[in-house]
Length: 192
Image (cartoon, rainbow, N blue to C red; front, side, top):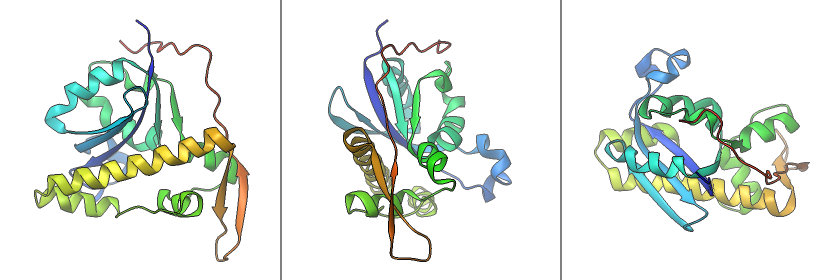
């Protein structure tokens, strides 16, 4: 099988860390929606929990997952929904790359405002409230907006190899080198 697509993704959950007894119970969180951008199809999609088999098909054909804090949050939450090892898919986590260069974490909204002039439309807790109120279309819009922001930041990394980082307690910005290099081969190892 040839893995060709690159997917930018983000998940939202039905519940919070407080609902599952803390961050150490991350894997007990349940997915409400998963937003995805496919580079091959040049389109966005959003899947509700009952539609995750469709997402599984996309994942089986991808050579790269791109996300923000996705290795430490999205992938561990998603693992229980698939009968293959999603963590084996090659993965570029923007937050992980920035944190390695910066020595600290930074929020997606702050990074987006500094680099693409657009911020997030809300916060994860608001997404949980949208789910609880049954406002699924608003939830999907929120999730896909995060995917769009993540994609634009990734595209900027690919094009320029750098990002602007706002400095704490200051109006100053610092430029850091953040790069992505296409691998020559992208085997998915122990995926299936």
